[in-house]
Length: 248
Image 1: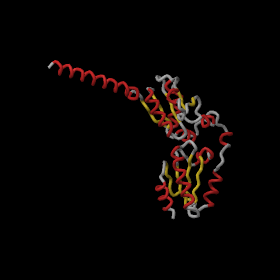
Image 2: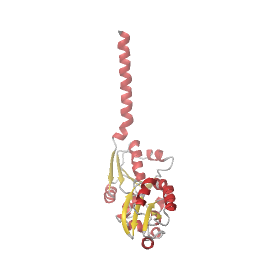
Image 3: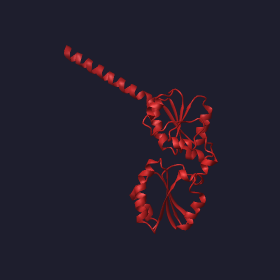
């Protein structure tokens, strides 16, 4: 009788410790508040907060080509990313952004796990920010002048080929890299039938703004200079093949 009661007490104590441990491990993330804001709302929030962090989670090279005023660069791809954000004051609001929103979405989860109380994510990243004509620091005319593919080039492309599939991509975009082998394979396979071209948005800044490109990868299909289809997100080889077959 005594042994049974003592064993039950030990079981209850062990369960209590386990529940306490689980509660404490999840409490940091549970106490975090995350909001995804439009570019205008993101800027208004940044301007209204006297004490905050604005964190650019892109690469240093991307940061150097233009960033939001007051932002610090903490590259999400760096091995010390978590240790660097853990060194920040977690009671201050943090506003996070990247190029198109993919990396900042992952970063927001890391900030929540680290215990930050208030987190804001820029919807559409800097692509959406620039499409709303909002200012960048160190992003003057010299940066815009680096465009290698202009709107005039785009118009020439449309007038030269009757059937075109355009893949808008970037070097930093993981889904874009994943799609590249399939696009190269299909480009050879459909040569003479459909012209497949890949456009790096970082080398076509003005065109990206004119076309309101805010997320990558982006596929556009044109027939006789008319836009037939616009699809955002990763596409498998099978999905790309189906798109091409519809142009036959």
